Length: 501
Image (spheres, rainbow, N blue to C red):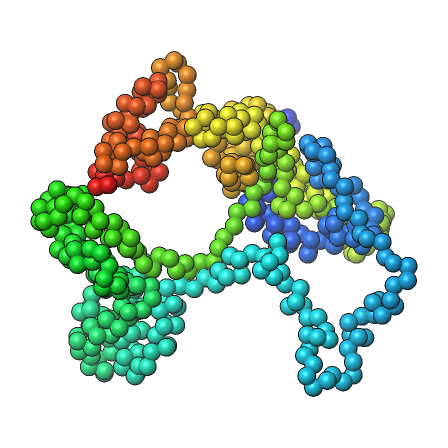
């Protein structure tokens, strides 16, 4: 085989570094994007926040992100509040620093806070608008930590502390003891020679801890522990104990007629007993959250300005960036030194990063605006008015690829007057109607919720009945589809929803 050179012409798609960066930023969530911006500001001296630069009085290059925000601005800008004029004859002592105001010697009864204002005093107080109760109180304490804290308040010897630690470690997040006492006893240190009665006594001690009902081995014991903490004069307390102890399974199966015969109660009396039991907590440990509160920061904001809806970018998500003109002026074209080459590369990367952010924001605005246009009925009337829509519809409308729309709607959130929704929420499949139209699956779920909320608790609607009611409205949905939507909404079956009152 003879080797030869062949000249050939062709076309191929190449992913440039700039395009790769733009795609990577587009598919990032809000938190990831903020981390990326923070890292870029720390690593690239050519980048700076526009707010910081304006505060320092630096003149920098035009910011394309600012230009994009101004082009999509729909409401008039509010005038910025002006600082009050400084009095001409101000006290010269106000211009001195805090350190200069500290005297050499303090009086005996003088506290440090009276002379020098510490940084802790700058924290928001409970009466201020900046006060966030959840952020300052969500410590992320687990149920085990809560139980160990109470254990430390008890006067126990070494053997008892060992047993209590083993029991608390076996309690799950709902407050139930996962292992049997026999299994726990087999796993204990044989050097202590524990007896089963010791383990039972220690479990009874832990079951007195808060929350009431913790340490139970099953639902029956959990409810009985909570009933034992009620006032002995509580109405129907004895009947509630008997029902939980002997007939709890019948109550779970809604066998009310059989319960009335076995307990010799009338319907009104049984209703009072069931109400007392329903006031108890079947998962006492679930109220002690182990994780701290998490927040969703929306990428776009949809609001109604007078008679029309507008879409705006959330300025807190992507701050305005620009190139530092002072550092950029140091770059010389003809200089190939190491320092100049580094600065030139940093300048190019800074411009690419700003353009990528600009492209991300423009794409989010286009997608969100098109979603608002197509789902305007949702914003006016709620989920029941949601229209069927797929990614291809948005891609065709704004002339972008479907994969780009998928990246732009994943982990991106929209703040609306009806709540915060992920952009994916507005996309749903459809079913046909008798008139030849289409109905969104999201709208069908909302209709199912409305029907269940308005049903008679003593005669709840079955899946077949819900399908028939939707058919009366011209929406043909199979019974198994209703069951699938109902389970997705965490709505129990008609048998489990049936109530005595």
